[in-house]
Image (cartoon, rainbow, N blue to C red; front, side, top):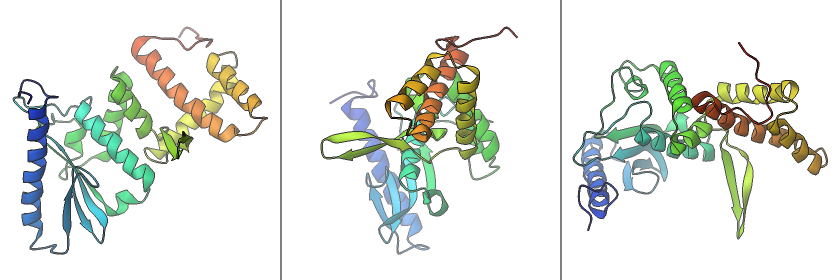
Length: 248
């Protein structure tokens, strides 16, 4: 069995699961007087969930740390892993946010004026939190955060699988709709103003191979590629292959 010095060992996992169970018991006891019809589950819909008539009403992510306070800053892996899980839930059920509460319970601290602090029930400011999260995603070099950023922008691929065949069936509707629209417009503008870039050539070749069809799905794929490429340019100065960059 692992030790508490190894956060990925068996001891850390066991303690995290025990934390889930203890919280589920406490939350259930608190809910019984006012909501006796609710059922509580562990590792079914989420780490912990309340459900009614077989549908989740509260999805609760638990993040437990041993021998350290933990971190819930804007670049926190805990925060972005949680968001990635919830975005997948919303991608599968776009109406989920209208009938389900999403809760992150953690031993970590959320610094003042961080996105997590702004998403507490008191003094909640979703617009400010949105700006902070997108800024953190663009400046981070952590691959897990980069992928979650793409999902948050609504440009994450939606998987499809049947038997042994698996492919992407487009882009999920989860995430920030304004940003998704902006990125799609940016992709069309990129084709117009950067026709010799590798991304523009990739787009035209892909459309050509499909006989001129699937332009809509291909522009979405281009927007996803462009988001990642621009992220690399902003954070590491990596110029997109073939792009013409003018001095300011």
